Image (cartoon, rainbow, N blue to C red):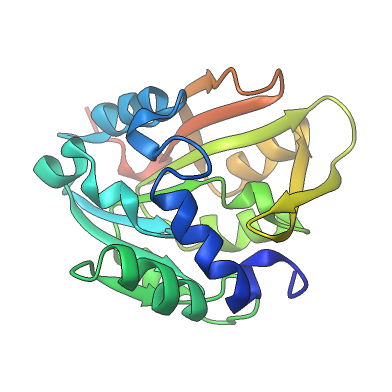
Length: 213
């Protein structure tokens, strides 16, 4: 993972260009934003609105109206991304510096009601392990946005990104659903993004949060 663009400071300028809409549409103008927005609407009103954008990049999610109006936003990402991208683009945001791969202790995640991962697990070299590590800390709702799910065994490809390279994970569906269930989450919503035939977004809810009748 350290060889990927996410760890390289020289790639941060390209991340800023991406956040400004110079490389592709900004989040609110993207062809997948409406799906993430719908999942955020489902969650709102079901829980208190403390939201963690895990793998926040430039932190652009905090600028979307549904988040501004309904959630208390915090972003989390690698130190170099927070310092050189998030604080450059959204300096008033609240951020946590973390590395979900290297850090042994990521229990700060447990204080949040909603954890959003927008193409985070997607770029992991060992996606099932990292997903399990994160889900272990999540207490209520989880949104996994833009993840490739396949009938094949899990495999990793690479592609150029931000002047460097990134991993693209394609997770075996059965193993993906198994680890979600193992960590006591139910799938509340599963949507195809239309980005590729494999690409999906999901809303998860931990079973213990269900209200007793």
